[in-house]
Length: 399
Image 1: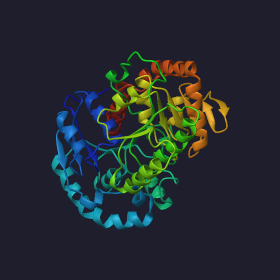
Image 2 (image 1 turned 30 degrees about the horizontal axis):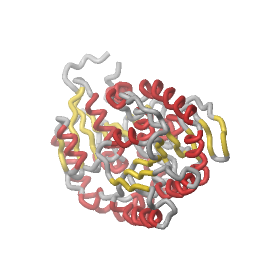
Image 3 (image 1 turned 90 degrees about the vertical axis):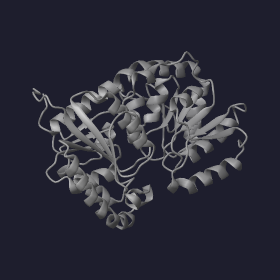
Image 4 (image 1 turned 135 degrees about the vertical axis):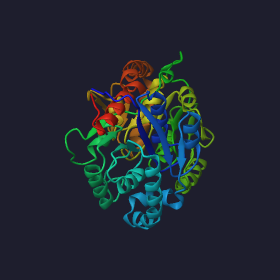
């Protein structure tokens, strides 16, 4: 039993001050936290995420990590890039160690790969938990980095909280009970589905613009679908990070030279994803590499928008939780709550989009079933209950 009356002091470490999927998930988690914990956040850059944490009423410490935390995906995936970045990390690690000593938390939580590496180096005997939002897989990172991170997962944190079963499976062979799965949860207001007819509105893709998100494949598929549906419009919501600027530029050129240049809207950044999902008739998730979870899929289903998604990583856990899918075309499976498509196959993606447009009754049925199920499986209360238990267990204070 938990007999301590003083709240547990928790320091959550994030390498970024900007808002990404992991940071949005953390903000929702902080909002659900209870009085057993006294939480503060340390970021290695200031920005929108740090501002949101402050607005939520949590103290924030900012260390200026400079170039040491401006890590691109290409650098992370490259052994040479990681080695070059390593030297800039040493100074930051020393400052992080000093900050941890001054704050003196009972528990440290690392909320990203970079944060986990730094915390693993400086934590010493302090207990820490790794919130793992990325797959430690060879299709994403250089082999030596995967091996090193899996070793860290084995010897560093007391516990790991993975955002999906698929993500947990990439952490390597770990002692029993080391990893718990806590899906990124949504607050109750996210499930207030408006009365609407699925299928009305443009077909769209929502998320950071970049090679791992598949906007180019989306446009290729859209061209094929548009030949059959001449009035259908398409919408791309999101912006590119600095390292993805060349991809974004190439995407704009691709659209300009396509058959549907006048029917594709590049909407840019939106600070209200739920509004974007509600306005779409169909959400397309087109990532050509396995997605650790697929947060936009849950958010779309929560407001009643049908989904077509590439099949990999944690996506199947959302759309086909009982593994009862049926093949409806080459490279396309029908799950309980949406269609799953072979990654990187624009032709199969076009077939799946067309199928959803041609079967509005089936699409509506999948959405209704999804809404009932995900409200339970992906509530922030369920997420917090798992995370809180893991945090206490890491300190030896579990029930």
